[in-house]
Amino acid sequence: MQQLEFFEIPSPCIGVCEANNRGYCKGCFRSRDERLYWLKLSEADKRQVVRLCQQRKARVLKAKEAALQAAQHDLEGPEQPSMF
Image 1 (cartoon, rainbow, N blue to C red):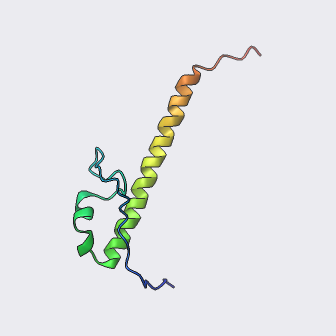
Image 2: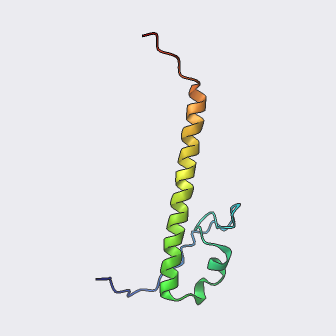
Image 3: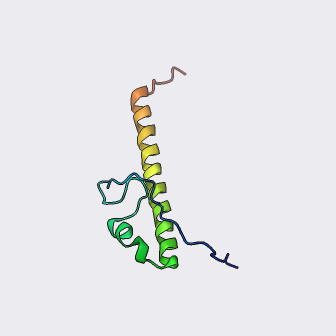
C-alpha cells in the first residue's frame, strides 16, 4: 500500500545554486531543466526528480569517498615487504 500524499512536494533547493561539470546543481543535484520547470511538474514527476537527485548525490558522495581513500593510500606510501 502506498502512503497518501497530503502535502505538496517542496523544492529540494538548499540555496547552493552552482552547476557542476555535468550540469547538475551542486546543492540539490537537479538538472537545469528540472530546476527551470519545477513549478510546472506534476507531483509524481517531482517525486521522480527527488529520487533522481538522491541517486546523483549518493554517486557523488561515493566518488568523493573513493578519492579520499585513494589519496590517503597514496600518502601512506608503498607497503613494506614482510620479513617473515
